[in-house]
Image 1 (cartoon, rainbow, N blue to C red):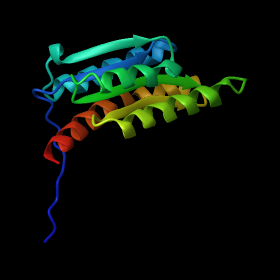
Image 2 (cartoon, helix red, strand yellow; image 1 turned 90 degrees about the vertical axis):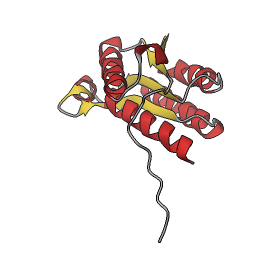
Image 3 (cartoon, rainbow, N blue to C red; image 1 turned 135 degrees about the horizontal axis):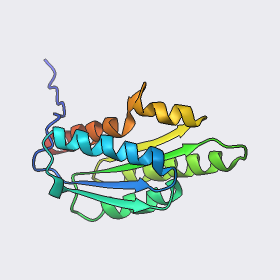
Image 4 (cartoon, one colour; image 1 turned 30 degrees about the vertical axis):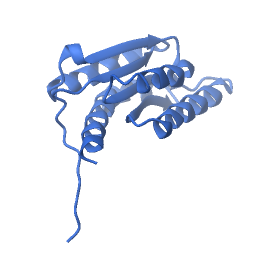
Length: 154
């Protein structure tokens, strides 16, 4: 019979670093609220969460790298919102932010969670920041808790 290893959703005693973009703050503030709520509801203490605000999604990879290599966190969460406009700027920012955060995650021994919305419309972003589609910030927090616990079990 195989051995199964599953991460649990218990954040007690864990420390989390959150990098959140100020650009599109009316969306990212909701993502952060959902993220913090999920962490606290699953046992994290306020004092075990560090939030770092950055100008935009493009700056998230550099800060997530600093957080992931600081040796202080069990998991790092990147939150942002890139909403398509009328220029190709969206494509560049969305691509570089997601690639950069993924690269940090692959190079780090600490789980790095992507909580960056990349939507075609403002309405889609609003739906994913706490209305019809739930709160993707809360989803990112749950993933961080589970991955941090799984890392410890491995």
